[in-house]
Amino acid sequence: MKWTTPADLKAQVRKLWDRGLLLASLAGGETLFPRRLTLRSPDSRGLSERFPEVREWIAQLSSAAGSYRIEWRSVNHRILGANEIPAAIWIDTLEEALGLIGKRRAADQFATLVELTREKQPELVPWLAKRPLRALELSEDWSRLLEIVTWVLKHPRPAIYLRQIDLPGVHTKLIEGHRGVLAELLDLVLPGEAIDATHTGIGGFCRRYGFLDKPLRVRFRVLDRNIRLPAVESDQDITLTQASFASLDLPASKVFITENEINFLAFPDVPDAMVIFGAGYGFDNLAAAPWLHQRGIYYWGDIDTHGFAILNQLRGFFPHAVSFLMDLQTLLAHRSLWGVEAQPETGTLARLNSEESVLYDQLRRNHWGDRVRLEQERIGFGFLHDVLRGLPR
Image 1 (tube, rainbow, N blue to C red):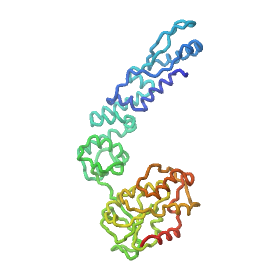
Image 2 (tube, rainbow, N blue to C red; image 1 turned 90 degrees about the horizontal axis):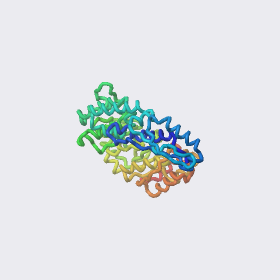
Image 3 (cartoon, rainbow, N blue to C red; image 1 turned 60 degrees about the vertical axis):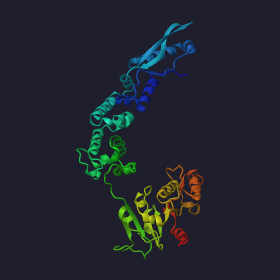
Image 4 (cartoon, one colour; image 1 turned 30 degrees about the vertical axis):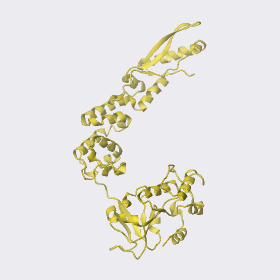
């Protein structure tokens, strides 16, 4: 068995640091010291058979004992006589632990953050105890983050753009770059009525806390030349705000959604139809249009795991949406054009139908080869025309 070395003791304390426990104690977290460290020491046989090595081991532990305390025990050996060997290793104080791993300066920096937070926003001290290492990463911006929190407390749901927050040294990029942390902090200090809990994540930051958000937009083309929007000529490649699009109620019974811009621009004429340039994993801009729920929706994405994940998300807004050119026949017909998906989706997609689920499972389990994908732009337009002709009128 390997005996514990000074490096092993240091590694044990370093684990406490990496878990944030040492810093947390500075913010009112659990008191860790005095703390007994794990010690693997020679047994009676090792003492007699490897006595020179034992003496060297004791010397190594003793030489580094300034940052820990050694508890000794006497061992009487029938050949070697009485000897003192380490029985336990103790770290008695936080200061000793920090000194052992060279983190005193970082701890002083964190203690400064705790003191500042207790002065400015004491309700956030528990966050520091919970996320001390993250707080240390934010040390350069922490005072300004506290100022932002204080400002929002004084101006709940301000109905302005983030750009309009007027604080010295605070700019839009600082706020946008730290939306995740600010959300955690604001949730701790704001009253419930100042938070719209229906909006979550970085994308929902503005709406969650009552800031104005840039309007969502929908880009679409009308594919039937007999359907014309007033005052719009040419090919009617149109971009509208979410609210304007929601009020349209276009007389088209079929709506295609495609994720590729060239496919969107080159989509052929189809009677009684329109095409929307997709939004990846975001469909909030479409969900506000009630008339879309009365239209046939055809989603055309890549044949890969993420394509099916996006389809699955779309069905959360439009359960009746149909996949388009995302079937086994299309995949096999374009075998020579297959590519490789960088980071496949692996989760369960509950909104796929049975045929889509089978293909999705085959893709994520590499049934057709390693991370197979067919990008939508690789599908020939002759193939597209054939499938379009087979759609119900």
